[in-house]
Amino acid sequence: MNRPEPLPPLAPPAGMGPLPVGRWFLLAGTAVALVFAVGVTAILIALTQTQGARKTLVDVIDPTALHTLEISTALQAQEGAIRGYGLTTEQQYFQDYRQGVADEQAATGQIAALLPRLPDPSALRSRMDRLTIAAAAWRRDYAEKIAAAVPKVGANAVNRDLGKVNVERFNDVRAALADQQDLLNRLHDLGRDRLQKGWRTIYVAVAVLVGSLALAVIGCTLIVRYVVILPVARLARQVRAVATGDFDRELGVERPAELRELSGHVDGMRRRIVSEWRAAEEARQQFAEQAKELKRSNGELEQFAYVASHDLQEPLRKVASFSQMLEQRYADQLDDRARQYIAFAVDGAKRMQLLINDLLDFSRVGRVGGELTPVASEDALDRALRNLDALLTDAGATVTRDDDLPEVVGNTLLLSQLFQNLVGNAVKFRGSEPPLIHIGAERDGGMWEFHCSDNGIGVDPKYADRIFLIFQRLHPRDVYPGSGIGLALCRKIVEYHGGRIWLDGGEGAGATFRWTLPVVGDPDA
Image: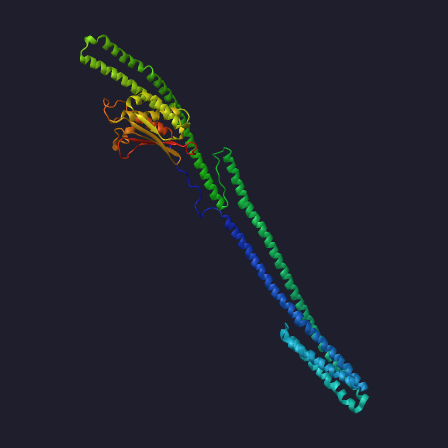
């Protein structure tokens, strides 16, 4: 049978072909992580700016505007109180005036504390200086003159000239207040715009994050679909086609790298299986032809066995019969040498018949033995001893056995022949004492180990293997008759049952043969 040709590599070399699935997801994950990092950074920056804008607006600009309003209120209160004091000379008005001044100074001090935290402190500082100067000029030129004149002239302290001065100086105060309030309004609008811009940035960054996550989900879905699901489905269709009998169908997908390698291995396995299958099919055909030839050969062997057992033995019987008749009829005419020749011819014919029968028995083992079934070894031994009854009686032999010989898996006729050959050998090769033969068995795992011991002449251990070969004899034929097939037949019977037989090389007289047979119910039997 020809060996299949070497197959090409199962998969492309490493580092070639499309990206693996892990690389696809790594790239997608890196892109998503980058977008996510940018979005989170933008949100953090926007939150920081928004927080700063909110603190500036709420904690600085709005309180400054409130304190400016307090200054305006305090100045209005001062103007009304000092004018009332000049018209009525009542001290309550003068006290209200002093309270207004104190309130103005307190509000001015609070604004001065907030100035460093304003977005443009110099602009507000210049306007505060203008307001302070305008308020000081009004108090110097109007309020303080009325306060100084009331104790002297009483209600006549307020005159037309001071009224004009009041209008002029207080208009300057109002203008300074309006300018400062306008600046604070602009700063308020600027802070509000910064706050709104920060929130818009946060909204945009959150939207970008949500969009990037959506794109990541879509991208992963597309990767799974086009890089995993579709190639797997394509490979599955190809495998199904092969499974349905299209063994020449090529398997292969181009992406991803893992599936490409896997498809290469699967295709290589397909090609190897197809190659082995074709080789096995060729071998099966050859085995079928050999089985057919073997069947024909067995048929011829059966025919030969029939001829050997009938037609071939008939001439031998005639040779022996007519030789004996020749000796009887012409006995008085034959000398001793002629009678010896006739005896040789008769003996040769009988030995040829024995040899043919033994060869037939040897050839039948395993061919016409029948099915192996549970067999009681006691029954097989009894049958063998009945066949050897005359021989055992003539030799004065004693055969003993263990109390309970086991049940084994085998064929009754073959096992009987095995016992018969071993016991017959023990009687044939006996010594000067009457033969003592013992049959026993003990369990050895999944096998029964039998033994047949005798007190005969024994066997030299160096011939332990030779004695089981066909036609091998250790003694001359005129000393111990036989065909040299007995032990070879025993070996063939034991091996047919799945066991083995050997000569025990123990010390002492006689010989001990051991053999194994399967235990009934053993799974390996």
